[in-house]
Amino acid sequence: MTTHNKGFVSLYISLLTLILVFNGCEDPGSVGSGFINEPSIVTDTLTLDNTASENFIGYTGNFSLFSIGSYSDQLFGDVSTVGLLKPVRSVDIPDSLGIVGDNFSMKLEIQLDSLNTYGDTLFSSEFSIYEVSETWRGNEIKTDSEVTYNSASPIGSFTIGQEKNIIVDLNEAWKDQYYTYFSSTEADADSTYRYEFHGLAIVPQNNTNKISFVSSSASQFLILSPDESDTVSVGLNNWAYLLERNGSTQTAETTSLHTTIEEMMRIDLPLETLKAEYSAKNILSARLLVQENTNDLTSTLAANHTRPNINLLNLHLGTEFDESYEYQLTQPEFSALRDTVETDTFKSNITLLLNNVFYGSEVTDEIYVGIGSLSGVIRSTQVYNGNAPEEFRPKLIISYIVNE
Image (spheres, rainbow, N blue to C red):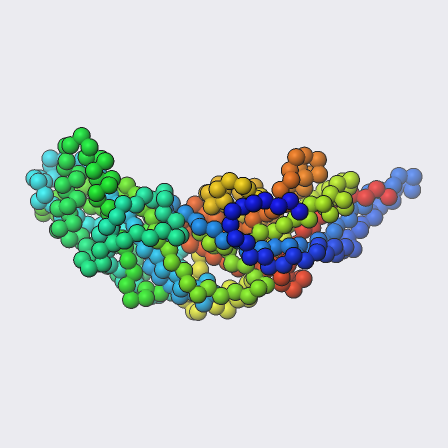
């Protein structure tokens, strides 16, 4: 097994030996005239015992959606998210609006994702909006980031029930402060705005019991004329969310996977064994199977509670570069799709990987299984690892031709 120094702490679940289970898949086919030997297809099932749980610090800023709310998940812990957003500075206000100086009002329009809610779908969640008190950038916000805000003076408040579009009134003091920046004609106005005006934090109140997802492109600030008959839309300059998770539960037989890559499962392939057994064979296909812990996933959801669904897993090869960036923000080398019949199983064709190992220059023995996503929706699932009972462990199924 090739060893890579990844620079992070690994929790080894097992260092068991590879178990070869030969399934009787031999199909001699028809014999024809009897003078030609027909090839047979043989399929071997290899149980992959050598797995580990890996933890990374994922990104949570400037995705298409950002999270607001909190939810107590029996399986994945108490999850709380605070949304961060900041309006653009440059605002073009037409004279027809009749705005002179700061004689206007401001509102915040929040557009929620209509497809996904994490938690109690029937719950009405309450939020307060506060002024952020330090500089932050969406591209730099991660799961371990901390950004302070002034919780003593709310800028606004609102409730999310069943509606997907919310308009929130913002107070005059904050509006007047914003006006001094967008109306500035100073040469360094953009720089001053970047470092002095910090935007807003949307903070859940009173155990909201669900997490909603805000569209960064459809949400906006609104500048209203004095009679509120006309508006100017102000887009977002930066957005992100802060994440806190506590009290997740799992057994030694399972590994949790999150789109924030707080946890992934690493599978160490037995390259030397594979080369010895299969490099001289005519490989037809190699499929990696990972099984989901559907039992606990189902039993830990109450009525009317939902988790955003997952239809595929990402498979990344081990890297010595920035793991968080590679495993969350780049395209995976392979994907494992949920099987349409065995719906608790994800399957991936990794034939190309084995061919590169046998006949090319590939030496990586590590496959990182995760569900990294660029959407911003918080998704989680749980899969069986190499410490589970043998029938649930990850499998490598290799089919090859034998000439008789």
